[in-house]
Length: 252
Length: 298
Image (cartoon, rainbow over all chains, first blue to last red; front, side, top):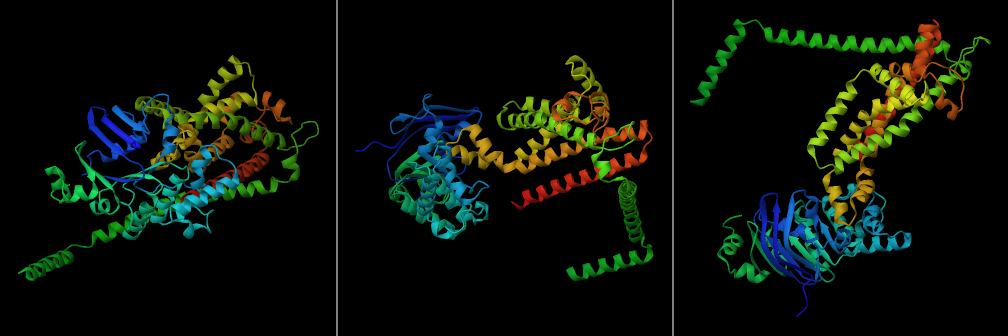
């Protein structure tokens, strides 16, 4: 059996005095799609943001326990958090393209990591846009402002921007919750293609979405990981009565 | 049942309208008329002031006036020294006030974690911006001219204006930093950009026009300032290259206007300068508006 790409071991997390995560242990394997589901405030987004240490930006956050990325402790003080985020990319709930051109948005990541050569950048931008299934729609207006794109295109641009620094893992925080059904379908299709190259962890409120795209699903409730299993198993034969109540729509 | 009720109510309402004279309508008209009056007084005052200055100024503005210098011996009058002094003053002030004010605003908005410190500094700078400029002049004279031995010089005047305008630059920069959505910062950090990298590649870029608006406001204030400069930069109207100019006494356009009108009784010249200042302010406010419109477009 191969090693997991990401491995949480007994992860506790506090915001000030409030404990938001209780002893989470979870293994995520390469080139799988893992969905995190659960009612609002259950800790699924907090857990996601811990994986690339975006929670560091919150002042009062305190973490105990381990998260291993390719067997390295991500909280190791020697590790440069910016290198970690280069390996573990992130897509947010609301599309957040920078107020620059489409090209500059995609080239932003490679540029801050030191790539200056125009030809190399051109190639990266084209490849990232192709991987995010956006190239055909925007290739003739790369110099236009990214804010002129539609919401769904903006979200795929943000995915392309994350792909441009060649991460191994892609974290997605409810990436379709601000989008219409057609854009959502496109993103889901894209996730299906991306999983041949990347490991994807996705937070979603939409259980149908989890069923459609995820290989494995984790159910969170009040900061605890209640159940983690293959998606089919979790939805059809939940082991825990709370999981069963949630996936059958009895609360949440 | 219901239709009958409403019918009755309508009847009651109508009879009330018949018995009471229509005060409401008249009240409404009265207030509308008095508001219109207030507006027209303001408009006429501003407009006539501009027209008055323009009429008085135009006959005095010519090339000799713009490019000459005042001399008792040759009996000439010109404002080139004052124009240059104003430029030196602008340069000297902006050179210090922009990095200081912008830097402080970035620290307060992006780095400072103590909300108390932020509100303390904001409170102090609000008070600072309310102090009459003549007080700055007095402090500047004691501090820069005497304590730092800069004498009465444009540099001393510029440094006084720096202190005076730090609150403005800080405030406008901070306001425009606040409008940058947090999602930009998160997006850049998630791509592995460090904090300073995020600030200068994404945050500052998306609020440049706000910052420029603040700088233009400051330029306007510097152009119009006289009280603080009387004590610190002096009255001299001699042509100087920039280096000597900085360290010697020199009157800006506003101060020169005061000198011509009050000390020498040359009201024509004063009005000429007023015309020039009017044009400069106009240019600045138009530039500020264009910039603001551009920001909104984005």
